[in-house]
Amino acid sequence: MRRLPVLLVLAAFAALLIYAEGDLPDRGDVQAPANQHVSAYYIQHAEEEVETPNIVSGVLADYRGYDTLGETVVIFAAGMASLLILTRGGHR
Amino acid sequence: MIDRYDSLIVTFTTRLLVPFIQIFALYVIAHGHFSPGGGFQGGAILAASGLLVRISLGQPVVRWFTHSRMRWLGAAGLLIFAGTGIVPLFFGSAYLDYSGLPIPFLSGAALRATGILIVEIGIAMAVLGILLTIFDHLSGWDR
Image (tube, rainbow over all chains, first blue to last red; front, side, top):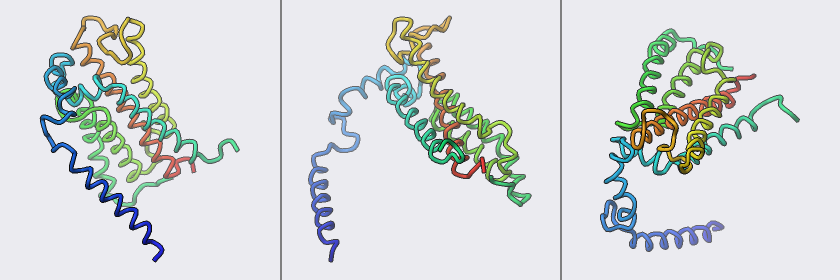
């Protein structure tokens, strides 16, 4: 059985992940660090600061605009890569 | 090159559906402030309408969303986004701080909302252009 070492490594990794998962906060936990910091500020101030009732849009395009710009650049890079790779009869 | 799909039902349904798909996409883009939606989703729906025309009516029929225009549309969308970020730098604000945009009669929060709309339009253009570019290259438009 040549796959036995791979399976053992995978099982050990899964056990590690399951062990670490116990320390994660519950979903939607108010006391979790992720919910203590900026998200409370966004929920309280997004409507008056950005005037967008859809908080998701405000966070996506305004507070986290740099992140969204990066996502757009990734899409653009994917398109340019396909253009370079798949174009026929180009420079050789 | 994809040719016309030889079925009256498919081609007629496509011609019937595509205008409504595109109107809905524009609604999703423009209404992103108030309801779920925005540039990525609206651009993807617009691209879906373009794909529907390409697959059922054939690529020679495409008149507006043509292969040669789409890459420029994608680049223009990205430039709109990045340019909207750069312009406030010249008016004393930070990068991507839309409250520094030089738009008359608007200030503060309303200006930021307008900046979000401009950016969403740029994202939609980029997504539309790039998705159709990738499809055209995979399906061999230039062959």
